Each structure stands twice: as C-alpha cells, then as structure tokens.
Amino acid sequence: AARDAVRCIEHTMVVVSGEKSVYRAVIAPSAPSSSEHRDSEDGPASPTADPHMPQYQRALLASYSYVVSAAVDRLLDLIEYTFLREAGCSATLGSSTNAGDSANAALGGGPNGAASGNDMDIRSAASAAAAGLRVVDGVRMLGPSLSKLCELSSLPGNGLSSSADDTTIASALCISLHRSTVKNCSKTLENLARSIQLDPLDGPLHRPVDARVAKLSSDVVHAIRVISPFVSAYKSVSKRRALPWDPNIGENAGEMDTFVRFLIKQLSISLSGKAQNYKNDEGLDSQAKSHLFMMNNTFYLLELLAPNGVYEGSADGGGENYRINAPWFKQKMTKSFESEKAKYLTYWEVLNRHLTNVDDRELNYQNNKDVLSLESGRLLKSRFSGFIEDFERVYVVHRNFTVIDPKLREMLQGDIRRVFLSRYKAFYDKYSRIQFSKKNMENYLKYPPQKLDS
Image (cartoon, rainbow, N blue to C red):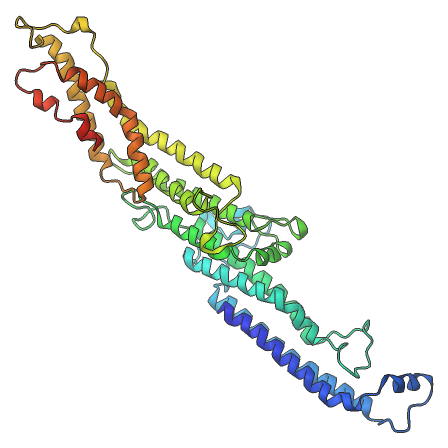
C-alpha cells in the first residue's frame, strides 16, 4: 500500500505536468511577446492584440488550477486512506490527549497501562511504521517537485511576476499533504513503541515455559530492521513533530538511533517483567528459569543486532544486515547477560560445598588396613552422597530448560564445567582409590568425571 501511495504521487506529477503542457500548447501561440508586453506598458496596446485575451488567459489559469487541485486533493485522500486503513492510524493505541504527560501517557497508556481495543501486534505495527516512513520518503522527495508544478508563475502568459502571489489551491494542498503525512507517520511510530510496551507478561506465547527466546525479542528485531532503511524519512518526521522519546524539533531532533534506543528500552522493561513473573511461579526451577530466560534473550539480541567479528553491519545500510553500532547497545546487553549468567551459575556452585578435602589424620583404617573405619568412611560417604544428591536435583531442574542457540549452549556448558568439574575430578581421583564402603562403593562412584564431562 505504501508503494502504491508513492506511485500515486508520481502519477499525480504526470497528470499535473500534462495539464501544464496542455495549457502551454493552448496559450503560448496567442500569448503576447515580451516586446508587445513592453509596448503595452509604454503606450496603447497593439492594434492586432485581442481585447478578450486577458479574460481568456484568466479562464485557462482558473481551469488549470481547478484540474491540478482536484488531482492533488485526490492524492491527499489516497494517502490518508493508506494511513487510516493500512497503517492503523484510525486511532493511536490507547490515545492520550494530554501533551504534557509522561512518555507512557504520550504513547497512549491508559490507567494501569491498559490497552485500548485498537491494539496492534508488534509485527503489524512495525509494518505500519515502515509503510508510513516509506510514504514520508516519497512525499519528501517528490512533494517539492509536485508543488513547483502546481505554481502559476512558470506558466507562459500568466501576467504574474515571479514574486507575485501565485499560490493555487493545489500548492496549498501540497503543503497539507506533507504535514498530514508527517503527522500520521509519527502516529505509526508511537503505535510501534506502544505495541512493545503492551506485550503481555504472561502466557506461553509471550513467556515460554522452557525459558527460551521470547517471541517479543524476535518481533522487535524484525521491527528495527524494517524501519532502519528510512533514516532520512525518520529525520523528516522528528524535525517537525515532538515525539514522546524525543521532544526536540528542528536541527536538535534525534536521529533513527534515538528511536531504536527507545524501542530497546521498552523491550528490556518488558523482558524484565516477564523474568520477574517466572520467580512468582511455583517449583524449584522458577528462580533459575528467570535468569536463563534473560540470558537467552540478551544473547539473541547481541547476536542479531550488535556488531561482531564476522560482519560489521552498517547502521546506514539498514535491512536484514542492520546492526546497532553505537556502543550503548552492546554495553547494555553484555552487562545484563553477564549479570544473569553469574546468577545462573550459582545454582551449580552449590556442588562445590561437598568437594572439600578430608584431613589425613581423620582417615583411620581397620585392622587389615584396606578399608576405612566406620567413622572415617562416613566422612567420605557424606561428601560423595551429598554431591550426588545435589547434582541430580540441579540436573533434573535444568534439563527441561531450552537453549536453542548452539553458541550459547556450548558457552554455558563450558562455564558450568569450570564451576565444579575440575574440583570434582581432583576430589574423585583422590578418594575413589580408597575403600570407604564395603558393599556400596559403586553407588558412591557412579558419576566419574568423564561421564559428567560428556
């Protein structure tokens, strides 16, 4: 629809240009020459001049103005239709009328953040915003040429000087066209930000039961990528409209990065709310699931949007290869990821409390000197059994989690190994050689380090 709207602008330019050519063809043969025009200023008109020519020219000018005004008016209707029906601008999401409200209210927040009935999902809102920016791009590039075509001063025989007031209704409509397009496009941008803010915090679709990457993160990455090519169009909007995330206008208005940063902020707030709701669930895995959920999502965002060693994406290029090259993004996501990973690994560090050495003076053997005494054997039995109990408990809890990204999965496995495996290997190698149980040694030694490492 946005591409069709831009084509309509081009078609209108063809119509207006054609009307101007028709006017020239009709009026030019009978238009007074410059010498005749000077004669008329210095003295009486030429005897051969048609006394009805001025009325004839004014009639043609009025006809031209009427035709091109109708064409531009129709173009304005079509672009309005594109925004109202295709881009969802019939009403801003949960619209607010108080311009002095906070960003939440300016984005359309109702009481307690309630959503209105006109809510759009994030991908639809992103498509609408991209469509709006595309139309702004078309109006920004073609609008001045269309407005110039609608002026009367460039017409032959119009009797107007270049400084005269030659504004037609069509010229005024061209100005309205640009203002209306900018206004409606700003609504689509606000709707996109609002749709992220209103993403539900609960439900299997929005908060996966296995703590995998949320659909919200995927949708926001898609949204940023589809709007990223329209840097100039966004600047055209932000220069003329005060936006909730950027109240400055004119040359002080922010670039596309300002809007992207605001979207990432809304995404982070929503992800944090979802993670907090995991902690409210029942079960032993609720806390760990919260941390893994944030790890999955922040790592996903880093992989898809942060610059990396394989390909340094360009913020100017946009599209599928768009990367946020500004340092704030990578710093923010990395800090969040490392913080959540440290919290997650604490669930595995509990295993180390069982891997303490036993003082050799406490290891007393029975008379045959091959088997530890009952009291000394209990010291090692409690350590091995405690490790096995905690390991199985942690493993059962964490095995139901999902880490789809192979790089993240391999990284986490390596981090978990480094938490306890080297200490366990040293402990196992030292004490597995000692006979501390007469009948159940295999039960205490059922997890050799090689098995855990695999």
